Length: 296
Image 1: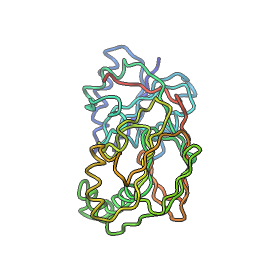
Image 2: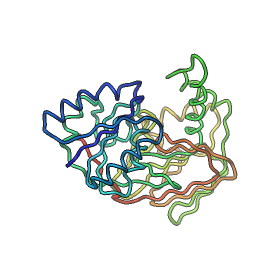
Image 3: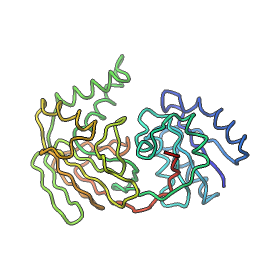
């Protein structure tokens, strides 16, 4: 069985590149056949994955980076017989947290290369796949505004993120939307945020779907109706802890297919992939991916 490590050299502020010597040492110590490929640009990872899968259909592929790198590699792995794992060198590493509390890549690596692959659900939204969580509305606005602020001088890291939250609050726009969840129709005259969860965590450890399981054949859907600015500041600490599910402002469902339509142009975020649209369509693909699960 061949092992391929696809390294995003800029993930985790260069943390991915620093772990390469440890990968080489460990693989050679265990006499395991392996290759290491370093991405040269965005969207390069799926090309690398697809080219190796063509030669080695049952290859084990590890995304060395964060959730964004994992999502990119997934685009090349989806629909194949390859197994996918992640060496968590990014900032969030949220999908992995659903399976394992250990996210130190150096401690995780020895067990990861020996771990079994097991089937998990994955999702297709419009023409892209995602593994963890997609969302529409306020939190995607925060991501968009944070990306904008990072382009400005002296706005980096946490400063940009905090600025992104404040800018989103200033520009707050509760939108109207209609949801079709399997056979159920839900109309929201004012929506703050909607979350479509295969995994439990996102945003660096926030817990929007505390009961989500990536292998149970369902997506956990959380729709939060429009809130005023002060109420948002009170709401998000509960979202972080996963204690928001029973709030009156929250509609919670479990389903396999989702369509959202809005007259407004809405920011949408899927495992770090950001875009704008008036509509989205999500289909759960049950047991659609062999995921290399590290020991809990």
